[in-house]
Each structure stands twice: as structure tokens, then as C-alpha cells.
Length: 392
Image (cartoon, rainbow, N blue to C red; front, side, top):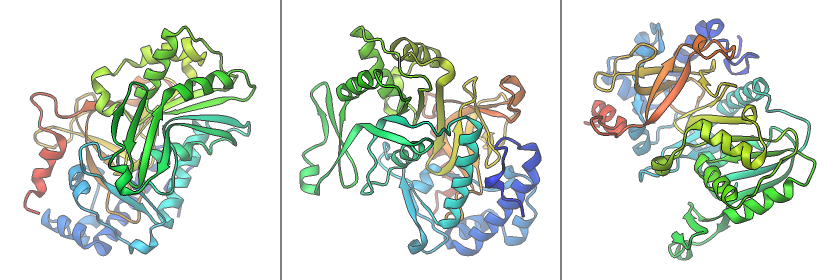
């Protein structure tokens, strides 16, 4: 049987619709059989194995709000079979934790291979990596940390430099090393240690790398990129990084949404300070509860790959709305064998656009994220969708 996650063309949705539905149904049946809590939730909605077999579209499958997944860990395989665990950042106080067994990891590897090849991220030319995010540590489980580290394997890595450096620390010392300390250093607690933010070291590292001949790949949070580059601009620093350099930003602005800048303004700043042109500025989008990565196309749109389907739902009725209409973002994928996260509603507001509107050549619909819900007049996604399960 053809493997959805190892398809050569990651955007052949039209040619993979039937395969996607087979994978979705098979995954739903597996979760129904092996996860008692998920089976109970489905049966509350009137879904039996026979009903799952009759699924005709992703919209029919009951969805879970991210709030529910932050409060409940549901695994469909014994935890000893989980090879990797990853957690959300927990900025709201709760964390979602997902686990990958070998089958799930194999699916994820196929996805990253196809997407990396399609977007020109693979290269045999060695690169220096500058990560405007968390330093990788086996002692921490943050998904964004593991995603950034995984992206440093698209090319041979000559070096990895991190803006948030990690120090393993016991609980007693950790409790004393949180919060802001001065204007240039910030301590951020991890699970088993502390991260120290120091952008001055990154600035000097970029200056040094601009004098070398190998490409530089900059990854990480857009806020940290903006803060770093704006400071360099104000100091009159203008670099020309080696040919083949690029910048890939993801993870959102989160608690810095109030200072979020327009993409075009960000790309202009990147070019003025680093000499990286707009065509070499990439973005990626994802959610811990939906481990599919969305890379931006040349027109900076997040087209839906074959591994997923995106449904936009009305904020009050949860019914699907037509393309071009804003609503709650419902993400669907059968990528995880180890957990029942087939259909989740995030706390993002978004719009799904017809792919032909983009003009980049990719025909699948593309997702535009408008921001986190919770603005005036709109109940938060997590709270609103959570009404479905308020008695659990």
C-alpha cells in the first residue's frame, strides 16, 4: 500500500484524497481500539467502529480542543514504546505532551524529507547554524527546541550557536534564576535547568560568520530576530552573509504579539542588516498537538501538505465555513500512531484560501493565521470548544 507520508510530492492533495481518508479511518479505528479515553469520547458523540468505517470526509470526525489535550495525556501504545516525547511551551500554564513511537517517527521522517526537498532546504554544502531559540538538551522536552534542532540536519552543520543557552540546574537553584535580569540577559526556566538569553553574543557571531565563506542558516523565533536585527540596525551594523545563507522563522510571537511587525517589514530589515534577500526568508508553522510542519512558499503562504487537512469552523456553531471566511483553525492528520490527535482545534483564528490565489504554482489551499483567539467579542477557542467536554 502506498505510504502517504513518503509521497514524493508533498502537495498532491487531489491525488491523495482517497489515501488520506483510508489512513484517517484506519488511524481512528486503531485509536478507538487502543485508547480507552478516546473511545469513550467518540462513543459520547455516537461514534462506533461501524460509524468510523463510514467516514466520508475529515469534517465528520469529532475534534478535540487543545485545552483538553493540555489537561489529559492519552496514549494508544504503552509508554515504554515511546521513543520521543515533546511538550508545548506552556505559556498559558498548561502543557500538551505528545509521544512518538517508531511508526510515528517513520511517518514524520518521510514528511520532513519530502518537504525539505520540495522547499530546497537540503544541501551538501556545510552551513553554520544560528538558532534564535532554545539550545538542544536531552534534559528538556520542548517541541520547539526539538523542531529547531531537527532543522539543523538539512545540511552538514559546521557549528550551532544558540541565543538561549542551557544550563542544567537543580530545583533549588532553578527557583532563584527566573525572570528578567538587566536589559541584555534574561533567565528562562526549563524543565530541569535554565536558559540564558544573550543576543550580544549572537550579534558578534553573525559578524564573525559574515567574514567566512560557508552559508549561515538562521532559525528561531521572529521576536528574537526582530529585536536582534533592530538593535544591529540602530548601531549601524550592515553585513553581507555568504551566498546560500537563509533565515527561517517560526513559533509565533506569542506573548510579544503587541509588538508584532508586518512580514514585509521583517524581510526588509533582514536584507538591510544581513544581506539576505526575501526569497531566502522562510517561515514555518505548526502545533505540538498537530505534528505536521507547514513551510512557507515563495509567496510566504502556508499551503496544506498531503499529510493534513485544514478546516475553518464558525466560532459559535463549529460548523465548517467556506474558504475565505475567518474562524477557528481545525487541523486534521493521521500522522501519529501513538496518540489520538487526529482532529484538534487550536487557539488560532485563521482563513483558508484557495491555492490558485497564491500564484506560486502550489495548488493546495493555504492557511493564513490571523492571531490567537481571545480578542474582544470572541470566546477563546479552548474555552469555547471545551464546552463539548465540560462534563468530563
